[in-house]
Amino acid sequence: MNKKLLIAVAAIAIIAIIVYLSVKKEFYQEHTGVPVDIPDGVYNILNRNNKPLASTAVTPIQCKDYLFQHAVPSKATAWRVQRVAHGVVMLKKPDDKECMYTSPDSSIRSYVINGSCNSKNVCGMTEPTSTGELDERSLHTYFMILQNPGGKHYIKSMSNDMYLSMDDSLKLVSEPDDSSLFTFEMAQ
Image (cartoon, rainbow, N blue to C red; front, top):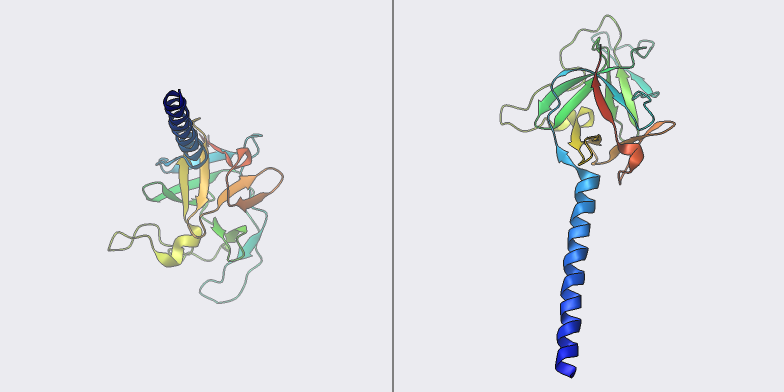
């Protein structure tokens, strides 16, 4: 009788381990997603409440004259998605005068570029280096787009591996949740 009981307990333990591992794997996939290429273009990026992605904190850019100009963020709500590598993009306003970045204090901000600045790569390198690697100095302007099984997307900062989250305001979180899910709709 003890042998049958021992076999039954072992079988239950094995089944419990299998169920635990499969649930853990599903949870991991649901919350991290897989890298996905979104075609270059202008998109309305909307949170779960259909509010457009918006960074309210801005940083003016010094250009060739080395003077800070008054920073006026774009009134456009859409973002131009520019592919850098598989699943990795830069997020810019359609006029290329504003781009999103992760600041050293782990907040999300936008660089605002004054009208007279037309220098190339102000927001970072738009393609991998000659060795095929992402430019280390541009990581703060790179974001990985991850698609979860439900079809929505997470936006992950490449500089600190945190996820964009937006309810009332835009912020970075270490673990994604429902406020980290965004939809990408082609702008008209």
